[in-house]
Length: 348
Ligand SMILES: Nc1ncnc2c1ncn2[C@@H]1O[C@H](COP(=O)(O)OP(=O)(O)OP(=O)(O)O)[C@@H](O)[C@H]1O
Ligand SMILES: [Mg+2]
Image 1 (cartoon, helix red, strand yellow):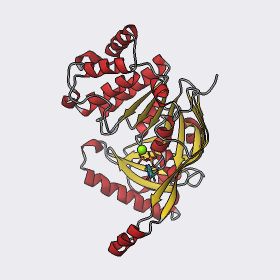
Image 2 (cartoon, rainbow, N blue to C red):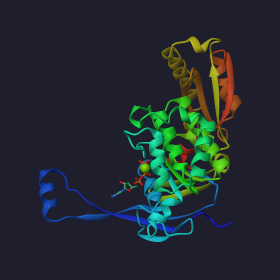
Image 3 (cartoon, rainbow, N blue to C red):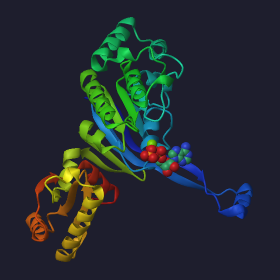
Image 4 (cartoon, rainbow, N blue to C red):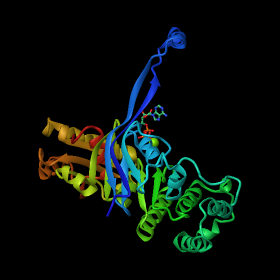
C-alpha cells in the first residue's frame, strides 16, 4: 500500500523582521530593516498510511500548524517533497480540497447565522456530494450522536461542545480520505471531551478515514492515537507507537498514598501539608532526590520515582516509619509525563 501522505525533507522558512527595542529602535526599523530567517519546519520526513490516526504533538510554536498548512496546500514548502493523495497539495488546491476535511477547535467552518442543516446543504453543493451519500451520512450521524436534534439550531446559538460536534460531522460529510484536526477538544468539559473522542475514534474506524490530530490534551492522545509524531523547534524528534515511547520510561512509577481512611473528605490544604511533610521525610532519607517528586492529585499524595535509582519499597518504608499509610496504589508513568519529559529534552 502507498502512503496517503508523503513528506520528504520538508522545510519551511519564514522571513521575519527583527525588531529593535525602544522608540529609537522603531525609528531605525523604518529606515533599515533587518530580517532574519525562521525555520518553522526543519527537514521533516513522514509517511502516513491510509486509515492511520496520528497524534502530531509538540510544544507551542513547534511547527505543527505550519506542517498541517503545507499538507492542506495553504502553504508551499521552502524545499522538500510533499504528496497528499498522490498530488502536490499547493499545486492542486481545489482538487486537493475534495479529498480532505479540516476541523479547527478555535473557529468554526460553519455558517454562523444558518441552521446546521443549511450549512450541510451548502457543503453538499460545494463538494458535489450525491443525494445518496448525503442522506446516508445524515442517517449515520444520527445513529452516531443523535445529530438530528441539532440540525435546526443556528451555529451561533450552540454551545461550544455542540458546535465542535457539528464541525467534525461537517468535515466528514464529503467522505474525504484525510481529516486534519487542530485541537478539537480545546475548551470542552470532561464529558463532552469523551463524547468527541468516541465520535472521532468511530469515524476513523468505521469510515477508514486517515486522521492527523494536533492536541495539547494527553487524554486525546491516550484515547485515540496509537502512533505519535513529536516535533520540537521545527525538527521531528519522535515518530513511533505511544507504547514504545512509554517503555523508555519504564523505570518511572508513581506511588499514590493516603494517610486517612476518608481522605476524600479532607480539605486540600490539609492534604497539601501532608504532601509537604512526606517530601521532607524523603529528602532527608534520599538526599539525591532528583529521582523522587511529590505532588498531589484528587486527594492522593503522589510520589513519582525512578526505580533505577530508588527502590519502591525503600520509599514506602521511609514514609511508613513516620506515619501510618491508610491506602496505597501504584501507577505506571502517564502519557502526560512522558511527553513532558520529551519536551524537556528527556530522551534526545
Ligand atoms: N506566517 C508566519 N510568518 C512568520 N512566522 C510564522 C508564521 N507562521 C508561523 N510562524 C512561526 O513559525 C513557528 C511555528 O509556528 P506554528 O504555528 O506552526 O506552531 P504550532 O506548533 O502550531 O504551535 P501551537 O501549539 O502554539 O499552535 C513559530 O515560531 C511561529 O511564530
Ligand atoms: Mg498551532
